[in-house]
Amino acid sequence: MFEIGNSLREARLRRRVDFGEAEQATKIRVKYLRALEDEEFGLLPSQTYVKGFLRSYAEYLGLDGQLYVDEYNSRYVVGQEDYRPRRSTVQPQRRNRRIETNVVLVVLVVIAVSAVVVVAAWTGSDKPKTQAVTRPVTTPAATAKAVPPLLWVQALRGPSKLTVHDGGATGRLRYEGTLLRGETQQFRGKRLWLAIDTPENLKLEVRGMAIKPMRGHRPRVIVVTSNGIRPTT
Image (cartoon, rainbow, N blue to C red; front, side, top):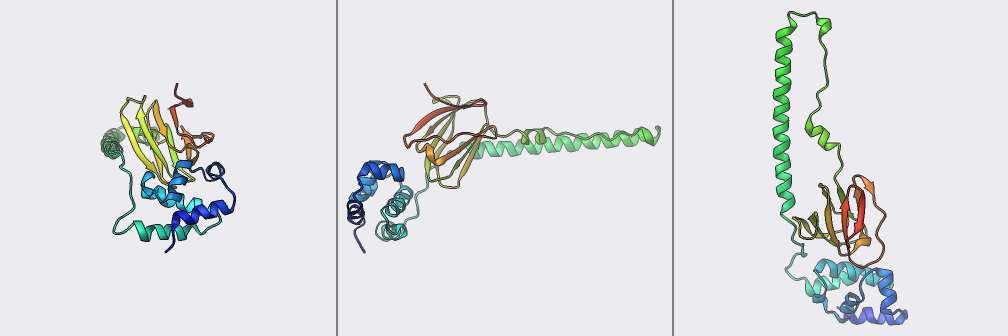
């Protein structure tokens, strides 16, 4: 067992690094770096942030990041599971409605095809076989799948809190939670309002087109339309 905070502080002072330099290199805010060195882990948003920041900060200082995460788990995570942010219940509801809609469309298509087959069989006996023409059937469901979502989001470098509303800040809530590294979300619509805690960790695509990554570690509020993204006024 060792003192996590004092060990980090001594490593930083030994390397003659101030908090500003550490913040630029790790993309972790100074207030969180101070909290790690003071072992005031309650100042961080969640245990997921604590572990991720501990690992990144320790490795930046030339230390074994996994060793610090294991020490934190042994001292502070006893009989608890990792915190997971509340996710919006809007997405499952929309997914269920989409499934119901697709089922109805498939049933309608099957009925339409069956009717075409019956009519063709009824009239085929009175017409030469050379007059029969087979036409491809295009279903609304297949057409809808060809259109990419308005916005696709993926967490690449680390976690980032994300809030999404329809239209504007007071519009219907579409999503609220923290995307962990490797997780994705996609949204359909015409106009979306986004609040992003750590924009440099996210990859965005609008209508299937990749958007240039947002630089800087300050939170951003943007509006997304089919024409791209823009900051709110």
